Image 1 (tube, rainbow, N blue to C red):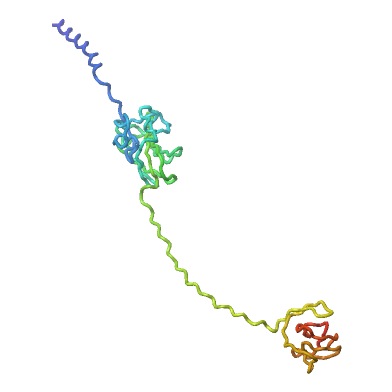
Image 2 (spheres, rainbow, N blue to C red):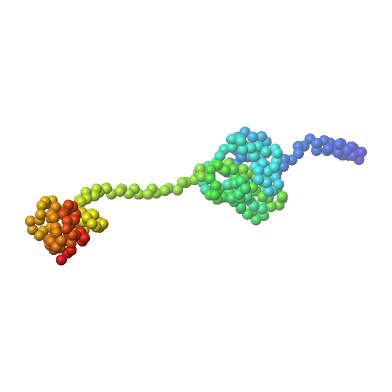
Length: 280
């Protein structure tokens, strides 16, 4: 009886290595990725973009901390960093909410969000395990247009992180603030100014000057009625001949002749030719 028991045990021992060889290796635990807006690996999983093995494990993009690529340095997922693939661009406003989906939790150091070399968001994890899904609202107001955002989940109890890239059109979504148009102001009708009436020249202003004989003074111009011959009275007249000592009246004033002359120019009035006349 004892011999039979030993035989059974020996047979079982011989089968055991065979069972170990036949059983499949355990699948590695998967972790997490950005599910909304749809990250590149989420689009692979949804079939939006044709991808390789990442289509079946979008949560597995794990690599050493400190990287700035979409595939976490894992060559099996290098297509996630291929910007030429037809990734669907998500329209967002100046802020956007990013939701992580976790299939296995880890203590969390923090979550980081980058556009290029600029970190646009940091959410502390306090070395605690998150819920199965978390959402972070990130300020994107310093950027606009098409941008590639890199979301990083830094694990607190390992040296690794998980990476997700999301293609965005910043400013392409959300509510656009309503701008109140400025009121239109109607300009008043143009009033045509009345035509300007030219006033006759004032007789109180001194007339323009002209050159009198034997003097270099210029005198104002004035118009006197033309006359000829010797004066019929003591009123000063054009074309009249005057001798030294003659006394004439001009515009209510009396003048004595200082030089003998004949008035050839109507501008040689007594008040304008002190070389010819002296006012009394």
